[in-house]
Image (cartoon, rainbow, N blue to C red):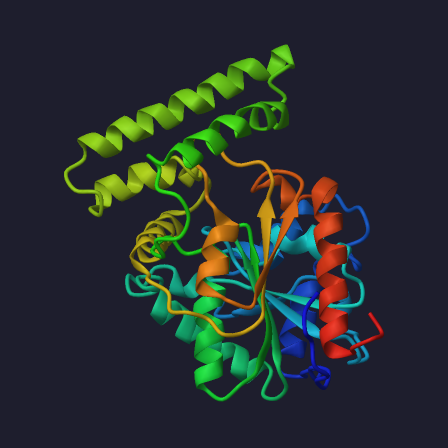
Length: 346
């Protein structure tokens, strides 16, 4: 589906291999593709292993350490939490022909009030580290959720540095400030929102009696957050931002410095206005939308990236990255990557 041209395989970069290998010594080999109960070790490796860690690029599958260098690198940017590993484990499992690396927000930078304060700055930081990690060859880059927006700016940054970005992958997210799609008062927007309700409720297992109470709590919580936002003075102040983020993510799961980072990054995403992107884009869009919001991912990417293709994926924003739905996404993405790096042999 892509008009791919033949490009050399991204080289297997030795830089930081020793650090990656030492970090993985605490984890059972083949962490992706085998069942392990060592969840705490996985979380430590991929997210908050060391509060002093400055690492940006992390191996998601253990095969990256001992790889023979023939697989192409694919880099995937973290979501709102900043953790760049655990979100992509299932994706990596179903892409055995690709070396998958996560881009994480370094834990040591979380406490810096400037880090994550703008999409431009954090993308420049990540682009710098990516260029060091892979000093030559084209990039295959993507992101899920907030990471898709950051990846867009990273791709532009890398291209400005003279590097090639052969593919940008956006997994169920796009920048807000595009004026793409229908406004919320438009009849078609409202109609699509109504049509989404049965699928949304079905995916929430609303027909199961045991699920009714947590669903009601979640909907009630979102209504409370909406009311709190309306009462807060100004939609961009810290109080309002806290309410908005709390409606998306459980902040209590994270240490204070990471909570602050999440709020900063959320504000940065709202403030970011993208430029048109001329490169290849694959945008994966969840078929099931949130109950009270229609993201319109496909319409956004068609507007800001003329060479984009939009691929619907069964599931919700969260479930498309889980093992029950991610297989189809991973197989399609791996096929597209292999067609790019080795046309006709995918």
